Length: 87
Image (tube, rainbow, N blue to C red; front, side):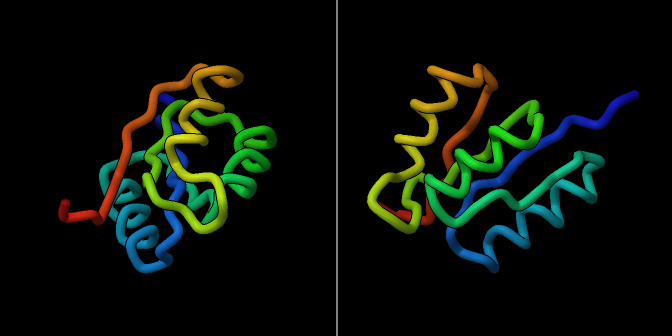
């Protein structure tokens, strides 16, 4: 059985490492993709992914919502949003 390839788009290194570790332990192929929208777009163009986990707030001008719009328009894979916001 092929493992589901998950990319994690998260600008906080410690949070990203924690997510990657948990996904790997659960049997997924997980890769840390990027700290920013631009890095995430570059990675998704190079790497095949089955699913994305996206932090809403990313470093840079564009955020995770912008990246999700990019995925919907160009890549067509499912995703979920992550956030550390308490509001």
